[in-house]
Image (cartoon, rainbow, N blue to C red):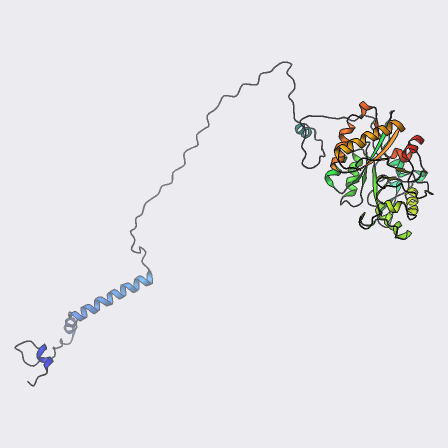
Length: 416
């Protein structure tokens, strides 16, 4: 056989040599004939699908193939709120003739009266309502500072003796109330640093109790002014060198035996300018300083400024410094909190009573702790029944000028 095998296999049986298919004639009829061929139809359909897909990509399908429905929503006015049912008014309370007045709490009484009550933090009004009205003749302290009794120093305002020999000791002192019988003066020291104890002493202790302020409090001038407004005469605590210095440190600007006279004088001027209105000074520590000759010019300067000095009795020995300047001085005979326990303080107060009954006068000192304030406040409630009067500490200074720091208040009270 001379024909290729593939032509034999693809050619229909009974036909001659395979011939290529005839092309449709030219012209319009020729193109239509070509379009009717299967390959052309398939090509046109594919081109149409590609065109639709391109339009969808370019323009997006708003329906995205999801079913869609449209509904019209009509807004309606909300119904008016229902009126609350009207309840009948409660009947007026029955009036009971001769009914006792309604009892109000202490807090309500204080709020209604507009009175500001100073209490230690954490305390609340008691259930009992007690209102104390001071008598019309209660002595009031003179305003401070008195322009006649001050001068400007390097560190601030300093006290001085005014015209006519007016002393701060006399002008700023609390007047002793008239009466008879044994007298006790109490000086509470170390105030102005702890706010709770200072507020308690100012508010709770009787006005005749004198208060001494350390020069280191952040608002020492305001604390002393509040104490004077409450009726207490005030003292300035003078930090001085103790026997065990520097193990015990009285604080900055303390007077020291190792300092020269001008240095201690400048420190004294600084301390005297911390606040105004005090009648005198009391030692803060200072056992060694008061027993040293370096204390003599200090004591003299205190007297030259019209002030007094009180030894609080905490040093085991009384100071032996000469008092050539005749500065008013006194020494406490009893330290109430020498043993800092409530029962010990109560016992010391009982000893002060006995001393006052025997000598007519007793001077005591005590640190300004909350416990000490509480014991003195409780003890003072019964003094009228015991026939004992509380008097300010200035009584011991004003009654007998010219004593020595170690002088006994027993002798001072007799001179008074």
